[in-house]
Length: 432
Image (cartoon, rainbow, N blue to C red; front, top):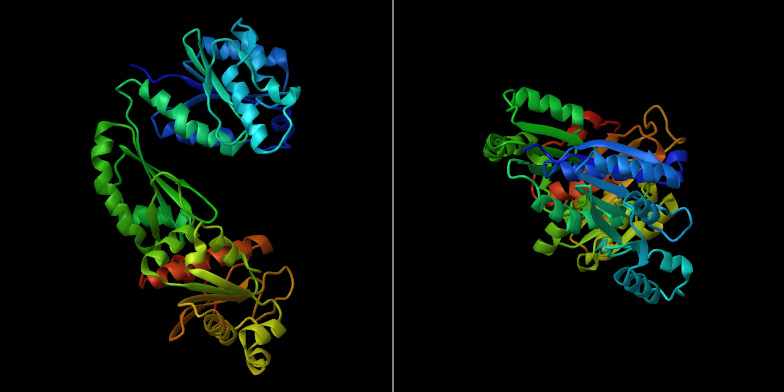
């Protein structure tokens, strides 16, 4: 039995003008691929009722599954419900489930229910409601001419939940038995796509064709996907996954189970298990490492204080970095980050610290310390490790990479990982 034909229709003037960049179709394509479905066609249209009606008719006659994304909001240019009703020659009615949802949504936010809000409850007759956990507009579905049509919100976070918790389970249940897709997603940090591909080519030259290997660059984690689209691929997956993990070495972070975790979440989880407290001393990142840590629920269990000492004066007054050290070596130096880390440990009484000081640019560099130079110091009061890197990126990217590397260095330290990460091999910088 052939695979169901799946198409996506995206709606919105903002998509056509470029005011909003379409990320939803890419996310949907990835999600559907994991259950063995490929998107055969996607169309983006402006908020134009005749165009939408014609396209819905066309897709419904030539597809098994249609995902309509966007156009469920309260304004006059949100036309999905109206266009669908016209396309399938149905009428609109006030849906009691949808009305109850938007009423409760407004009540919880102390918003007065008005005509614009209730517009989101005017839906095609006999449609099935798809709950929206966070947004004001429910999704809905209907079957027409043998095509299952799902109408979804344009807000990415709302769409993602609706897909994973409701739409995908329904579609998967109705898939033919001959469709096989088994996807494993692995998080990697510290090695880029090209370097990793080269490593795999060298170490695993006989990679099986039945097991598709894919990469998705992230910020900052790289995701490696192993997709088995046949019964033989499923049988091979476990063995070759183990081989891949060995090749990844200490760059391997985790196999994704459900929601992908951040570097900070992985680190905090490990520190909590060992009851290890942590502090930060930051200059060039301006508190970004602490921000990533405190974004994790329950961070207070192991993180009580972080220090942002941007100027030399504050490095001295708050963290006790000797003025002589600052004058002799400069703020971006091994001696200073060691003193920053020790000062933060003493002030906070934490077990573990990370300290960073660097030149984020675009100005401030020199021949010896060019823009992008950054010193790291991490460890406990008896064992402080250091490393200097050269990260020649723009200011914002530099700060994010420094923060991510800082978290990874802590991960490696508390897990006693002794190998040298690829970013040190490629970006190590000796200046003192």
